[in-house]
Length: 541
Ligand code: GLN
Image (cartoon, rainbow, N blue to C red; front, top):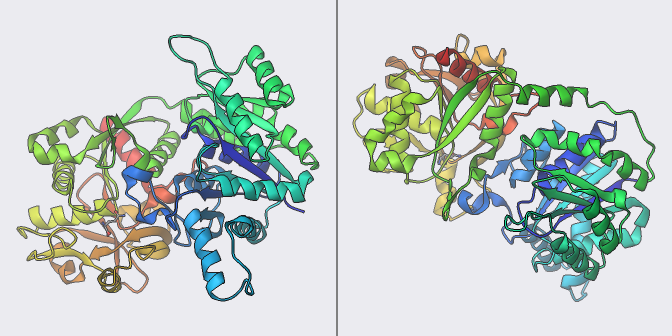
């Protein structure tokens, strides 16, 4: 019989539920259990693919082409395994299935109701993912915050599963304990209110995980225990730490996995966290730094600058820095600035490496192209990811191959030199307004060119990487661009799609049509990021 752990969040969003889920999964996996994690997002969108990154953060693409939430990325990074479409659901997806079934008369003439039919579909999906992954313990992260309207049916699904199999289900609350500056004291009252709210939904947490700037002290453990009716040793301290990869170790010190295993009546197994511990040590102990500039445009949220839209890129840089024994200092640079003030691009002089990540649309594009030109001319290691690769091609066409006004047709459909153009099947989809989950998505094989930097980095000819795009390198310009020195370092197996471009006469200038950042994990950093950071380190020397 598989076991289920439901994880809910309280007090504020962004409290680190995803990382907590991934960390618990890591601890259980390190004890030999087969574990998987499911993310439930309460929005009506069928997937994250149709949302602006400034709204939602990064869209994480799975191997099987689902456009999901960044938490799925955390699960993959921590568990060092692929998570598939079946492990992700949204309100939209759940309702869509129920409505489709109703249209097919699958409910046999019954009145189809929000309760119980929606929670039943949620439960069906949880069980399906458990079966497909063969997991012994499935951790289900319920998105949103307890007390809001949107996730109530997911709580109801969890309650129903627990009601049916009380010995196989656990409830975890990840809460936030504020330490208001003017008081200087950690407060538990918001957590007490959240537990009341959960109780009203028929759920009593088995464990309360306390996120805060500081560890939870004895008096507050007691308070939470008394007022939330849970044993004191079920109050788990989870304070801020330097790196998210330390969280499993923090929770391990609380003997959290042992307590969970006991509550679920599972047989304890020997733990092996050695590789994880070594990795965290490496992450923290880098000697020296490399300065990396990330040129994007999805950073701003009101008056705040958030790196959320580029989370996998940032993590991939950190993984690669650790194996290179350095620390990466990353600056988020707004490409709009270079557009308004082209001379500002000179600030890139102080960076040891420059990344232009993925993106869409016109805003900031000319700024990114200026940054790419700067990296090319000044021999600063450069990594272009998806849009970054496409714009590197545009820059090369304009400034090296002298095709004035060269562009991607995403920006200028009438350009004389459409070096990047829409893929044939994609233009049909756009004409029919089929936007949702219709890009070229997920893992595709690619053959590397012998002698290229990419080939050297991977150390093999055949690779597979994940994609998310509608536009591609225009083969009509292959001859002219390669004649001027652009190297096509990776092609689809049929030779038709250009997946990597490089500049041989540059310390490191690589653009990939795919998103290598999606496959980088702390225990297996991505080869291209590894080489990029190595090149940055050499420049610094
Ligand atoms: N906008 C580009 C395309 O659709 C690049 C997409 C991306 O960077 N993910 O092809």
